[in-house]
Image (cartoon, rainbow over all chains, first blue to last red; front, side, top):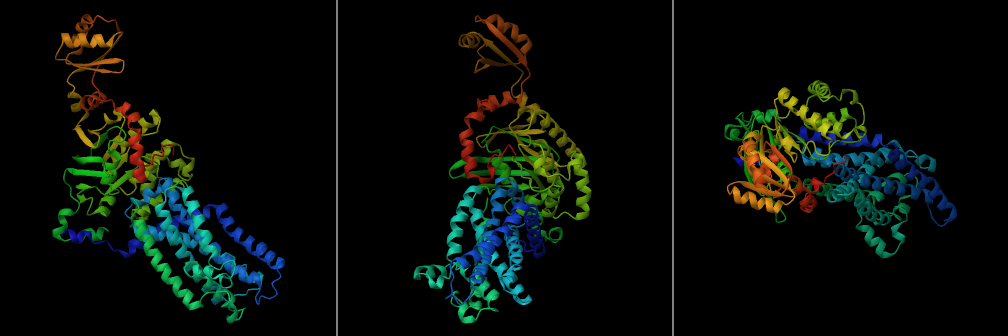
Length: 272
Length: 351
């Protein structure tokens, strides 16, 4: 008799509604926070246009068979959306500090819906940033077809989803905004630098290459590079600065997303 | 949700919503936090439509009890039924039956008053048509109609509290749980909140379960449970609790309390006497007749005399040997430790 009642209520519609409500609030707050909105777009733009072109001019890498700013653009795009996706999950720590998390946790919405809503909210903010940044690509002589623009968007979504889940796992374990900021910084640095976003890991020392194989972000950035650059740069040159080909990278990305999001939901359910 | 409830078969019907007189039933509820016994097996029941008060000092286990009844914290042992639903087996149904206002503010400061209500309504699956109707009613009832489009971070403490009450009532709960609803508010606002509470009880026919450490607030409740160190030490109407004292209270201050105490004990051996700080407190049946006798007996100089009806403070003192207010200071460390263990208990009273 009691067993029947213990069965979780798998009402698909309720779960979707729950995800939608949590997602809606995240987006509402993101759009309202104009400073965050503009800096999240302005900073990567600044890096790409000024830093990227500046580096290219300072080091005339004539021996490189590709344009450094093209390489840099795809890397910074992946790195900045990953960073934004992770830091966006800070809203949970924030909600907890200001008490609002309690209001959500005590509601009849299932924990899985809340977790997914939060992950998708962070993913969406990163996706908005990524799509806007992709619009800059033509100014770097990277002309994307509609299909590759769409495919890049999907890859950006996959990267952000995984990183947002990772952020949620950390946010579920942390109670103070300050500690979250510190931990995130410590986490993001190796994640970004060992992903090949700023320099090709293939040319670096063996240990960097080895470590980057264990970095989930490497595969996201691989995939993004293949998608953005394949129309302009020959395949054999792209494989010089990516660790795997497009399909393997995409597959690893998707598998990572599935596993990490399940862990995130599991972890979020244990919040008291 | 409602469809699911209707299709529950007969063998489950014992667990579904009932209309009996007892809307909350608690059986031997226990909660231990890492070896600390926060709640030591409490049992009580709350009747439909009453205002039930949980009175006790900080750290007595009030919030822990509310958290268990609202399915936020699982009990170590024991169980409870809210609106006929078991808190362990039917947490979702329990949550749909209750409205909750926490000790600390849980509003979303980034949103407007209206958006806060809307978000809550969506979380509790309230239909848009009903929501619009109830929203207007609630804003009018809590006198927030003019401020409905303003951001919550511009609200005062009292307004935030009112908005939280309004929000909790949007899904039309059967029971309203209020954890220290007036803590951190000034006396005027506190009084006003109580007017709202009486008003919603009358208009909305909800049962109100609240915790408080203010004795005058406990006196406004229909029934009061006094809780100390995780145990219920008395439960009755405020009037009956005060009858436990039996008569009147005399407090005197003399220039030599020790001597005065000795003399009174000598002359009236059956009298209930206690020394608290600078005062001597005496419980007697006919205070107005006893007082002249008392004064005549005392050789030390009497500095002040007071004769009054007993209050819940006296009841608490009689039962625990301590004053509820003094306890606040002593128990602060204990309280902080409990808060440290329970992440949600962090006091954020300024918000």
